[in-house]
Length: 108
Image (cartoon, rainbow, N blue to C red; front, top):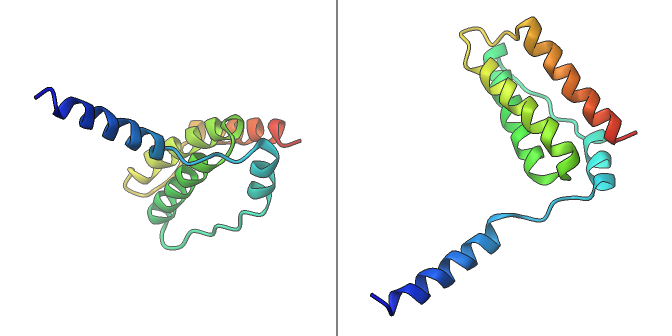
């Protein structure tokens, strides 16, 4: 059992080291976001699901300053996609706008 421990520890360290890909700088992130041309397709529920997945992918790449609001937007869109019609509530729409404004503050 003691012989396995170092191998397990080494494997864990290697996996942890590979788990996170490097994030873009704030400047690179803002430029990336300005050029993002993602367009969802399908009905509203399908679009909400596609948007949630897109936001999640973007949040995983960009600088943390813009990733946090994008992650919140992804979470909201996951909730929207979970509804029968894929419609945003007034509260969800307002929160999406707040998070978008946070991104705008960072990417002035």
